[in-house]
Every structure is written in C-alpha cells, then in structure tokens.
Amino acid sequence: MKKIKFLILAIIALIAFNSYSQETSNFYATMSLQDARELKKDLPNEVEILAEKRNEAAVYLTPLAGHKLHDRVLVHGPGYIFKSSLEEAIAALDKPKRTPQNRLAFSITEDALVNQTLGLINTQNIEDQILELEAYGTRYHNRPSATQAANDLKAKWEAMANTYGRTDVSVRLYNHVNTQMPSVIMTIEGAETPDEFVIVGGHLDSTSNQGNNDAPGADDDASGIATITEATRALFEVGFVPKKTIEVMAYAAEEIGLVGSAEIAQNYNNNNVNVVAVVQFDMTNYNGSANDVSFITDYTNATLNGFLMQLLDHYNASGPHQITYGTSLCNYGCSDHASWTGEGYMASFPFEANFGQHNSNIHSPNDTYSLTGTSTHATKFAKLCAEFLIETAKSDGALAVDETLIDTVFVTVNDSNLEYDLKASNESFTNIEIYDVLGKKVLDSPISTTKGSLSLHSLKSGVYVATFVTEAKSVISKKILLK
Ligand code: BES
Ligand code: ZN
Image (cartoon, rainbow, N blue to C red; front, top):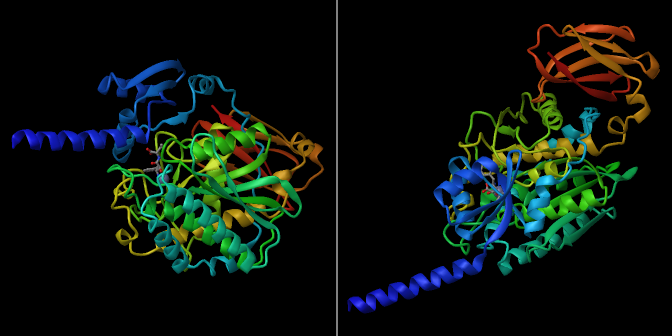
C-alpha cells in the first residue's frame, strides 16, 4: 500500500516537474549585480554570473531562479530582463544609451478640451473590460488564450475606432521573437507631425505563482489595459485629433522579463523613431496608500514625472476629479517603462500605491476584480492618461522648440545665483520656473529683463531643471547643478 502511495506521489511530482520545466528552460538575462550576488548566495546552482559591468550583471538563470525572483517581488523584489542569447546579455551591459533628451518642453494649454474629456471617462467601461480580460482564465504568454486575448483586443480597438468614425486610426499585432504571444498596437496618426510619437501602454499577459493556468491578472494588468482603452475612447468621443502620432500599446510577455516591450522599444530605437514620451499603466485599480497615484521615480524620467505631477496640480487639485499623488520606488526595472528607459526614451510609471502597499494578490489566482469590486481607482489613472495624451500630442509647439532657439538661451550658476541671458533669442519670456529632480516646482519667478539673475539660495545643492516660459507658452528647459 505504502509503495503504491509513493508511486502515485512520484508520478504526480514527475508530471508537475515536467510541465514546469516545459514552461520555460534556462535562460539569459541582465539584472542588478547586487541582486545577482544575493541570489547566487541563496541558490548557488541556479544562477551563473557571466559578466559584470558597473552595477549590472549578465546572468544565466534556471526557471527556479526566475520563479524565486518573482516570488520575492511582493516583498521588495529584484527583477531581471530577459535576453535571448549569451551575446545579447553581454551586449546589453555595454550598450551605449541614447542621449536622454534634456531640452524638453511641455505645456498645459488645453483646459476646455481636457475638462470636457474628464467628464466622459466612464468607470463602468473600465470594470467591464477588466472582467472581460479576467474571463480568459489565464493570459500567460505561451497559452493559446493569451494570443486569443490579443486578437480580441485588436478587434475591440478597431470596433471602437469605427464607432467614432476614425479613419486616422489603425490597429496591428506586433509579432515577437521571444514569445509566441503578439503585442497589440493602436496608432492614431498625427495630423501635423506624424513622425513624433507619444505612447501609453500596459501589459496584456498575466502570471501566477501556482502554475500559470489560473492567472486572472485583474489588477496586474487588466486594469492598465482597461485604463488606456477608456482614456482613448474618451478622446474619440470628444473628437480629439492629435498633431503628433499617438500609440496605445498592450504588451505581450511582460511577466517573463519585459519581453514584448523590450523588442518594441529596441526596434523603435534601431529605426530612430522619435518617441517624445512614454507612460506605463501597470496596476491601477488597488487603492492601497494615502495618495491616489505613486509616481515611481527609478527607471523613469524626472522631467516627465514632473510634467505629470503638474497636470494633476492643474486639473485635479480639487473637485469631482480630484487626484492626490506622491512618489515611490520599485528598486528595479519592474515594468515596461524600463524597456523604454533602457533605450534612452523618456518614460514614467504612475502606480496604484506606494511600493509595498500595492495589491498583494497579484501573480496568484486571487488577483480578481472581486477583490476591489469597483473601478474608481483606475478611473483616476484613465483621467491622468487622457490629460497626458491631449497636452503632449496636441501640437509640435513646445516640444519642437527650434533647436537654434534653445541655443540662444544662456544660463550659468554662480554662487547660488542663476544667471541668464535671453537676448539672442528674440523671444519674450514671462517666467523662470525651477524644478527639482522629482519634478516638483520649487521656484517660480517672473522675468522682466532679458538679462538678469535669480537667487537660488533657498535651495539645497543638487540637480535642478530651469524652465523658461515664453509668452506663447513654449518652454525651454536646461539642467543646472547647484553646488
Ligand atoms: N506589475 C508588476 C510590477 C510591480 C509589482 C510593480 C509590484 C510594483 C509592485 C509586473 O507585472 C511584474 O511582475 N514585473 C516583474 C518584473 C519583470 C522584469 C519580470 C516582477 O516584478 O517580478
Ligand atoms: Zn504587471
């Protein structure tokens, strides 16, 4: 009897092990050097550190090591970025990054249109879509239902564009090398500068730590897909025609190492696609902290984070659309924004709570809609998404500030005074604004002469962004260092 029991157990274990090892085999990745070393200490046989550079390591991981990393994520997790070969992993360490754009400029001018749009964001639509995605049972990247979800989302987005008679919208599947699941990309072609891109995204796949057949992924990340879909629908309803091209992306295979977004971002960079800004929506429907939105400040761009905060200050300070915010850290490249940051693009990640106070049921069969029971939290993110799209894609205005104009604005810092000379620009400027690295405005002063100085004595030493605002509300930004 005992023997039979043992045999049955052994067979079950064998089946479990087999389907597990089929799930994924050993793979290459890059990750933080410190995390790699810690993992190696815990699991010496599951990790090989192949190369080290600065604070990053190229590694070879077993599926068990990958799983361990995933499990840790709920506490405070090291993640990894999947690489398809040894060469790619090594090359990723050496890769020269794009020069980050720091002559960046954003402005807030579309009050009427934005306020109208905010009133149209529909909480019920968000709920419906989360439930719809949850109903696939699993969207784990290598399951047929994940590819089905991508096909269905393409059809849904096409139908949505058709409903509003949008002939400037197209939807495509983006096929990948390292996963069988495609990403879905909706493109709204820019009416004036179609080669400038503004991107919002979320990931369509899901995962579960109890085998990947029961992975509802309601918050992680059906909520993000529902958020960007509803924001876009509201833009269609108000008839917004962007001057820049907008792309709305549902990434494949984020959960196995940012696979879908990494391939897309790399492809865009290789083809020199001018992506002006990217915002990621991954987990938007669990209200776990005092503030509504937590801006993740690592692996994101401080200037873009600051602009999103300005949007909330401007449109959501009080009233029926009130949204509060703070900042938090992931401590690693925890979602698809990191793929864009890695390619040198400006990316932000407004998150549902402070890290650690987020939904603790993600990556399990319990990540269901019933846990939140409402979509009010995600609705706030859809509002932020719509504000961002309207104000960033509206025109080539501020962002396309003439390169020569930028070079006619001279600034230096001397003895904690910002000295500026704007004469050569032939522009009239109204204000100087100073932002800290988190994007918080710390000084705002009117400009009355084209040459002058501004005392920065009230500020701590550090890096700041000095922004000069023109009468036409264009802005020119320069990074400054205060000693
Ligand atoms: N939505 C999570 C990221 C997340 C989890 C952010 C908790 C903040 C708090 C995402 O889908 C995810 O699980 N990412 C992976 C990392 C990736 C590189 C495999 C993770 O965190 O393990
Ligand atoms: Zn996620």
